[in-house]
Amino acid sequence: MKLINIGFGNLVSYSRIIAVVSPDSAPIKRIVQDAKANSMLIDATCGRRCKAVIITDSDHVVLSAISPETIGNRTEESEDKNEQ
Image 1 (tube, rainbow, N blue to C red):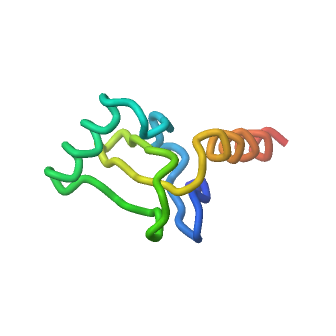
Image 2 (cartoon, rainbow, N blue to C red):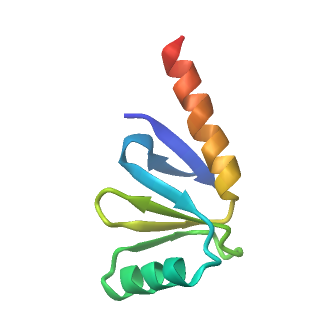
Image 3 (cartoon, rainbow, N blue to C red):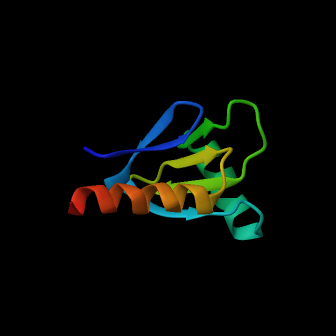
């Protein structure tokens, strides 16, 4: 199982990630609120401002304090290491 660091020592399984998006749009805010209402929200921001929302294949929603671009770069680095 490959894990991606999403900040502050928190890890998410690479194979379970469907999308990494910015939390600014209204549809994403609704997804976060619905996940919270259904107890499917995981807040990994450690009290900081949310910069990325990670959606998994199990309908869990993970909040991260690092940018979606940084998370994307980390997933690409993980893919590159696996190819070697």
